[in-house]
Length: 74
Image (cartoon, rainbow, N blue to C red; front, side, top):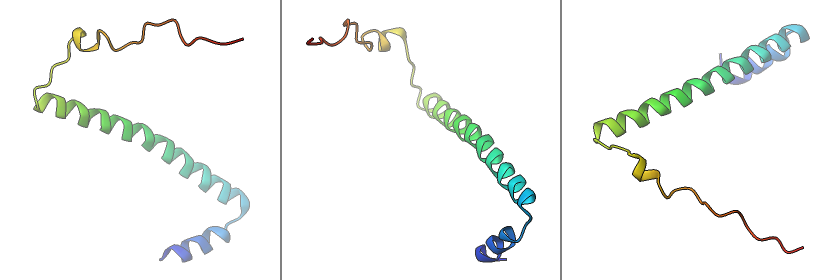
C-alpha cells in the first residue's frame, strides 16, 4: 500500500475513527520526543565518558553573568 492509498483509506474512515487515529498518532509522537531526548542524552554521556572529559565546578565558575541587568532609559 502506498502513501496515497493510505491517505484515501483514512479519508474513508468515519469521523470518530479518524479522530481516534489522529489522537493515537499524536500520543506516539509525544512519546518519541522523550525517547529522542533520552537517546541524545545517553549519546552525549557516552562521548564524554569515552573521551575521558571531566567537568569540574571551575569549568562553570565564570559562566554566569553576574551583572544586575541592562540599563533602561526612561
